[in-house]
Amino acid sequence: MVEEKVLPFMEHLVELRKRLIVCVFAIVVGMGVAWNFSTDLLKFVEQPLTGKTYLSDIKKSLYEKVKQSYPEAYQRMKLGEEHQVAEKPRMLNYSAPLEPFFVQCKISMLAGLVIVLPVLFHQFWLFVAPGLTRKERRLVVPFVTTATLAFCAGAMFFLIIIWPVIINFSLSYEASGLQSWYNISAYINFCLRLILMFGLIFELPILALLLARFGIVNYRMLATRRKYALLVSSIVAAFHADLVTMFVIMIPLYLMYEISIWVALLFGKKKVPKTDVEPVEA
Image 1 (tube, rainbow, N blue to C red):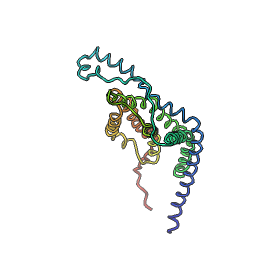
Image 2: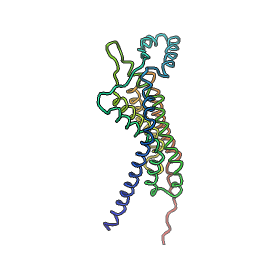
Image 3: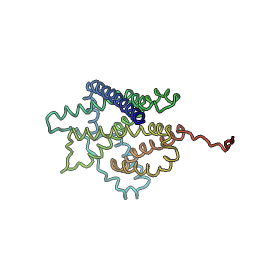
Image 4: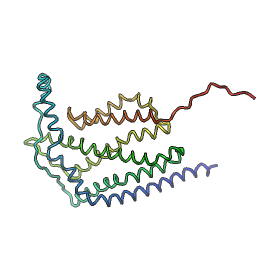
């Protein structure tokens, strides 16, 4: 009896080890491929250091409309006194030998992980496939494709929309006696950490779909916690941006939660209706 209980657990461990080995090998291969364009990725991440962002003209136009339509609010909020970031070339700095090399390794590792995302998600699907029905196992291609696109969408959303705003907000603290002097490791680590965070945030609907199919969560459970999701989204957004750009962060964060709710409603595990027919006694 003891062997019958231990054997399935050991089989799961062996299967997990097999999947992890494949994932690690795939990431190493992806890292080797990404190494060739890691320098271009670094230059792309450095672009916001110039102080110019897409929101500069939008904020200027918005503040001008507020000034014309609501002059009292404009004066009360002191929008005209907002410090503008000077547009000038800025460079990253390093203070330790081989520091740029290790930074390049980190960039290549994350880029390689993104390249092999289909392989990673496929290995995850193979690991959980024994707990799925035959019909659900056929959805491997839609799952891998959707999960990969969702992570990439989250990463690109951060790099194009959020990252310039965060750096611009940080540069706004520059003054005559306070200048920015970014360390390359701190700069890149912060960026890569947030790329992973936003990529995983955009995976929330996919996670909700899987949990709903297994009956772990349902529409009602997620819907009743909307206020907590909104609160958390607001706190995260307010921590990274000012009054105007905080909505640029808060809206997509909360939107992912709302999408997760609807995914749980549409694709969640349906409850089997109970029958009122009593069993016939023999």
